[in-house]
Image 1 (cartoon, rainbow, N blue to C red):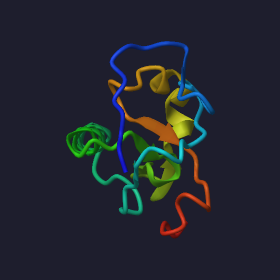
Image 2: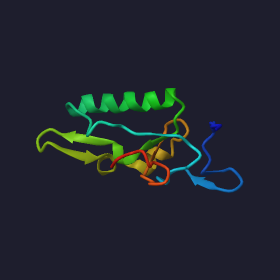
Image 3: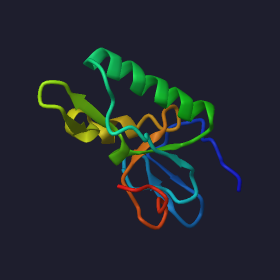
Image 4: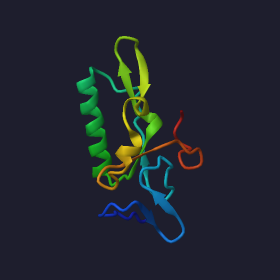
Length: 117
């Protein structure tokens, strides 16, 4: 399978049959997706931010264009619970930086069948 890297940032990308809205969280089945397997990011907020940054850099180094959004959870040290990434950050705004940053996408059971939510 081939992967195309887009260099400019149009409002949408078309391959002739599909139009990809860059700010959308809908996964594109033609792009590879990576998921974080930890229950949640551990440590204080700054350490969690560093771990998230390293994870994004790893995805870029591996030419992976999508990160599975439900797999990104931040740790709340006081309540010992996982906080979904989209409760803390503007995901649609993040996705406008694609392809410079991997898109954050929602779970699709057909595409992400190997991820156990």
